[in-house]
Length: 540
Image 1 (cartoon, rainbow, N blue to C red):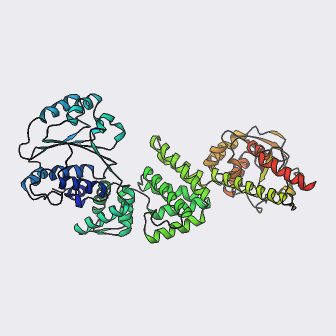
Image 2 (cartoon, rainbow, N blue to C red):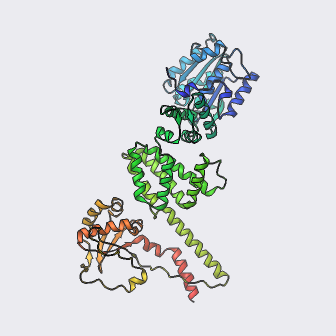
Image 3 (cartoon, rainbow, N blue to C red):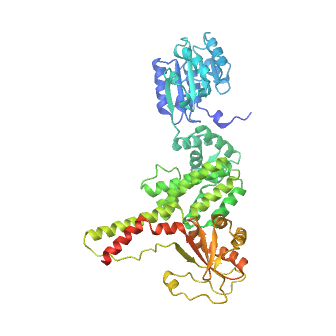
């Protein structure tokens, strides 16, 4: 019968345990000196070796021929414990045996002397699942058990154990196994199984396992089913993740603000049965690596990847500003929380991708504010030194109405694309001709425009769903509380689709402007007041 790799290659001695030298050395020293405790507590995340060390310890204390604190695995006691024929080592799953009656039975059994072995060993896994009554029933026996009994408790949630239990045990904390140790173990197992595992593939498995050796071996077991040659693509396919190639494509599209290609990539990966949760996690880790590469010069020890991939990460990090990377990590973290409870996980990830691609992200706003503050501080320093500062044109305090370029739909557009009016051009702009004049006033058919826009540009429709509009001097002026609308309208793609929707309703081309109250507030912000004061000082 086929045996899973994590069971087949479970360490049988303390020397075979990877990544926990602080635990194995202490236990070996205790066994060599004969200072064996009556109760041990092993705590740590899943797959780090708690149950494995408990089984090795149960054999070592009963072994007839121990070697440097390790069991020999050759005597009848060691073999009997391995095959389950010796009943003096009892494993209890506290998740399903968590009642007071279960602990009372255990307490009565503990009074009987061992049949074959020297010690009767109780290994209680997931001990945090015991009820309060069960913990109370275990207290006295745990503190002063018979001389022939040893308790080994294992848990992943140490904070759920009562202080009275903690004080009665010798505690060992199992750390997450380092990616280097996991990679070395995977390569060793693959060689013994006559399967070729590339270095990059082993590193990818180690990264996915997140410090758990059992998870790493389980994923390697799935990869073995795909053939005798395992590379990064095989690991990505078996784990249901995007892979590094797609991750770099994502960061490229996000850096360029390419909504279309980024959403197409999400759809393609979703159609290929890529797990959305895993994809979001991989994207978060990818941007974390970009953050580290952006801020740390010698980052080799902080990023688990091959040398070639590290060079790609450094190159991509140089193309993206740190504020943008931090903003993307924040957006992905929120998306990961929403994905867990979402009915449609794909939509949540798509929304996150749109936010990351949008130039109106909080990262850009913060960056712009930082640049403005730095500029103002420089001017103040120049003024303090008695030097002249060139005045800047201050922003108007009235609500900002910004024009964007518009055009007819593709099937109707026979003229060249109309150029966006600059502030200087707006002053001398001629009045609309009689052919393009529409009566000023509220845009009563604005709901029809939104319905038409819903067919052409769903993201823009979502932003403009609560907007209103008026017609003034041949222009459609949009009123919206959404601060991202202005940046969306400035995009050629979105402005073209909005013009198309307006053309469908009015039957003629109209210029578009945005009346954004948020920008009006920005115009009268303290930073603008400070800038105006500097300019007035220079003028005087």
